[in-house]
Image (cartoon, rainbow, N blue to C red; front, side, top):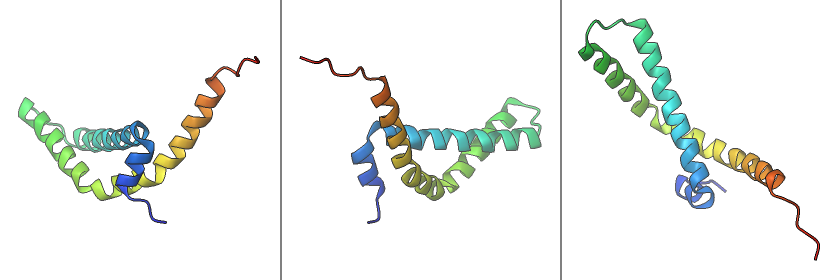
Length: 94
C-alpha cells in the first residue's frame, strides 16, 4: 500500500509536521550556507539575495522533501513510541 502525505499526517500528526519542518529547515540552512560561504555579499541586499536563492532552491527540492517525509515519519514515529514507552511509569498493581 502506497502511503500518501495525507495518510501520514492523519496517522502521525505532530510527528509528521516536525519531520517535514526539520527537513525543510535543514535543507534551507544547507543551501543558505552553501550559497553564503561560496559567495560573499558586501551589502544587506546581498544577504537577502543569498537567503532568497536558498529559499528558491529549497522550494525546488519540495518533491524530494515530501518523499523523505513519507519515508522517515513512520521510522521516527516508532522511535518516538519506544522512547515514550520507556519513560512512562509502570502500572501500579491494585
